[in-house]
Amino acid sequence: DIQMTQSPSSLSASVGDRVTITCRASQSISNFLNWYQQKPGKAPRLLIYAASNLQSGVPSRFTGSGSGTDFTLTITSLQPEDFATYYCQQSYSSPRTFGQGAKLEIK
Amino acid sequence: QVQLQESGPGLMKPSETLSLTCTVSGGSISSYYWTWIRQPPGKGLEWIGYIYASGSTNYNPSFKSRVTISVDTSKNQFSLKLSSVTAADTAVYYCARDRGSYWDHWGQGTLVTVSS
Image 1 (cartoon, rainbow over the protein chains, first blue to last red):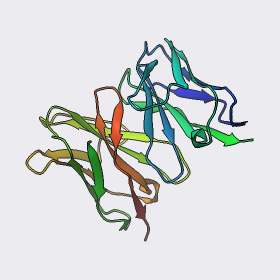
Image 2 (image 1 turned 30 degrees about the vertical axis):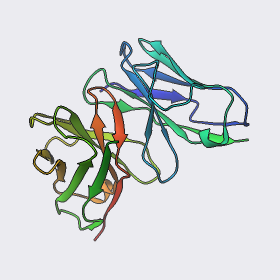
Image 3 (image 1 turned 90 degrees about the vertical axis):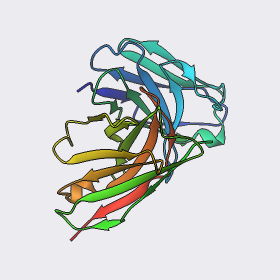
Image 4 (image 1 turned 180 degrees about the vertical axis):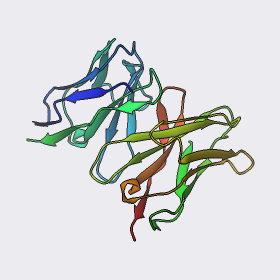
């Protein structure tokens, strides 16, 4: 199985800040990397697919980049509704696997 | 707007077979893949498997001996069966539309608790 490792696992930031979450794969996955946002008690929501493609309806302050083994999710100008847990997920090979999550909290 | 809704028992006993159904509305179940994912309380996400509308499946080897996913196109539903459950199978179970490499529409999730 491909292991996905996110860093940091948790972070604190303020409204208006820029934050970056990193995801590293245990082997090259090309650009088969997706990002999801999850709020407490809710289903995950797709933000970014294929490493850098913004899902319809997702604000442009979310951007994804990377290829191979290293990927980043950047949120510019944090909004109150952005405080949540973020997961990366690889779809390069089966079984599809997730990172452990990165919890973004208000400072 | 595609919507998905999970249904099934919320409480089960060890060794029983978990059975959940996902009803798809606002669109046809045909020509897409459909996935089950679970999340133990306070933990991360785990992919269980998917089915294509034609009936072909792919399962996570972690579940392969216990899991069956099926589809009923006439009802616009797909289902999950997981046999011989234990407390470790306690989780929120999500169904989702699978675009082949990512999941763009999700159900709200249903909590299944396994307890004697």
